[in-house]
Image 1 (cartoon, rainbow, N blue to C red):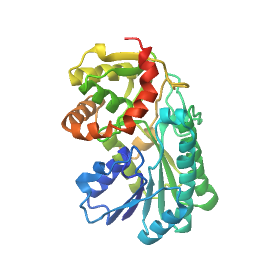
Image 2: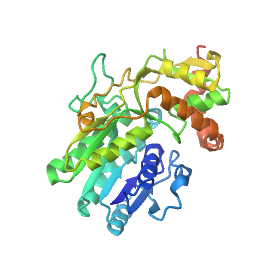
Image 3: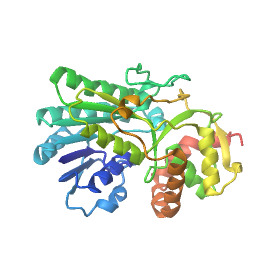
Image 4: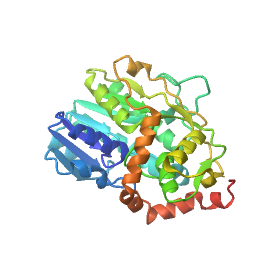
Length: 342
């Protein structure tokens, strides 16, 4: 099979590319990536010399280049990861999430339809469901109640992708995963931010009371689930939640990171909460589980392995946390930390 992966230099996309090229599954993997701040070709260093791998530097909103590349490579599958994916950045500047996540998805769907690509997998997020009141979990039919510009743009792109199945009969599927963590994650997300800050002896900015609950899944389990969904056969128009059922409050994740890095609670600072911050994410993934998929990582083992990876790859994260990242961090947390509560 030939795979066309958008956003393949990002955190989850690069993990999926590494998964593919670590097997005999593909004859070709095309990584189509704009290389924005979170895209990093170093994430693909382990597979960069594989003769089946091809990198194309491009923007998914560039219809001409997208169509040209798909026409030349004739992929069997498009796996669409590319997105502006950080809620805080979408709050500071909402325009990029709608340009990339909506216009970019539209461009990819049109190119797939024009070139008659046999399968299109749209990779989405649990955040489209909004905050889920306990004790309920959101299944695939749960109402979409996006709370942020980011999650609203993803909900819109989900509906757009599914409309191409209904209207045009395009072979589209959608997956919605819970919070990912693991190696090579850009340190604006909670786990890599707190792990690298702890290693550096810097403060850990915890939003509000830290009791926001997230449903964590190791990135390798997520990518295994995506491959499993693709291997199911004709499930066009279907939606699958992807979850490892690891609901943990941010406060407890923070404490576990401090233990794993050998740091004390004096690094914690409770800062002003994010506007519209969802209180709880929780997915019902029984539909996917019923097809035979199950996660391999426990949260405890996955977090320990993740901390060990960042400990062993300080050069990677020190290079990432420089320049424009420091400007963003100051803009995001500077005022919050000045008024923070230990």
